[in-house]
Length: 245
Ligand code: BGC
Image (cartoon, rainbow, N blue to C red; front, side, top):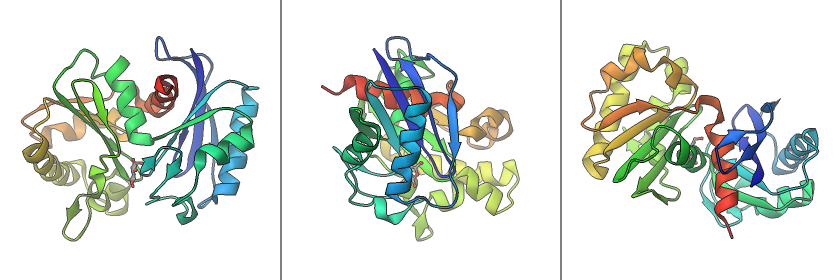
């Protein structure tokens, strides 16, 4: 199946048509930068522009950084607050004129990795963490996704863990890879003691520098970088749409 995968993020909306049988992009990824925090109506225009770029008429999978229940967004920690309670399937469906399926962005990235990337052929419990503006998580047991795990909001010192261990937090707090890696390690150990994953996959742009900080994490589980880098969210959003009946 050919599905347009779209990844909504803190600073840009990215998308590309995806072959959901192979997980490959069928055209070069298109990125539209967003200024500030666009409202749902402004975001609907950006999503429309992205679909128009590919002259798209088919199904669309959209990944969004918040809790998703069916067609609705429940939380929006780093994007505009008006997304909370928003029926994004109708919103983006109306702006593009296409059938839309909606999924959490980290769940999308996890789907891409488990089907075609670093988690393929791995059974048992697999945890993916995406480190970016926030911290996203995707949890799989025997290849099945447990949706909206939201482990980036595990409380640490009274605040969401993502305030300390996201890659944005590393920049904001001006931490070395060593210091940040150790804090990330403490966080990963908490998650390991609760979930006991066999495999932990680290995604997000910073995962390309994994050699600089993996050595400070010292996990019990096998720890690997994501294989998709920039494209996991796009590919996974398309896979999600393909798997919805
Ligand atoms: C959101 C998650 C999202 C993560 C990564 C968090 O702030 O609550 O839903 O997956 O950021 O974008």
